[in-house]
Each structure stands twice: as structure tokens, then as C-alpha cells.
Image (cartoon, rainbow, N blue to C red; front, side, top):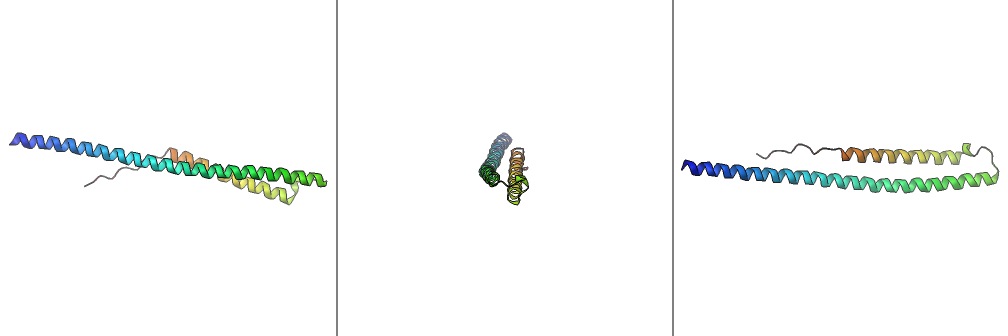
Amino acid sequence: MEEQETNNEKKKTTGEKLWDSTRKTLHAASFQAGKYKRIVQKKIDLASLHRKITSCHGDLGKLVDDIRESGAPDILAKNEVQELFLHLDELKAQAAELEQDIENIKTEEPPPEETAS
């Protein structure tokens, strides 16, 4: 009788170990999938920002050329040019922030798993 109880305890312990291992694996996989999803979304946002920066570079080049052709002196001091520079700086700052967010997400560790009672 005692031997049977000992075998049941071993089986229970083995089953519990298997369940704990499976639960931990699922928890880790779920965390990694969530991390990957957030990184992909940030990269999509970053690509959009890079397109806006490229467009703004084009606008700036056209504006500078138009001002040059009109013969105006001190092209870089013009309000329109300064506004585009400010807009470019804002876009670049947003891009840098997204890149930092991506790096932070990559280094995240999963939160400690709650134990079931």
C-alpha cells in the first residue's frame, strides 16, 4: 500500500513538473511573440517616418532652388527654409525615439511568472 502511494506521488511530481515546464514554455513563447509584434509595429512606424524625412528633404531642395533662382540673398535665413529645417529636426527626433524604443523592447525580459495555487 505504501509503495503504491509512493508511486502515485512520483507520478504526480513528474506530471506537475511536465505541466510547469509546459506552462513556462508557453509563457515565454507568448512573451516573445508580443515582443516581436511590438518591434514590427515600431519598425513600420519608423519606415513611415523615413519616407516623410525623404519627402521633406525633397521639399527643402526644391524650396532652396526656387529661392536661389529668384535671386534672393541668404537663402538659409528665409522663414520657409527654417520651418522645413525645424520639421526635419522633429521627424529625426521621432525616428531616434522609435529606434531607442525598438532597442529597449529587444532587451526586455519576461515578467516573473505567477505561480498557480
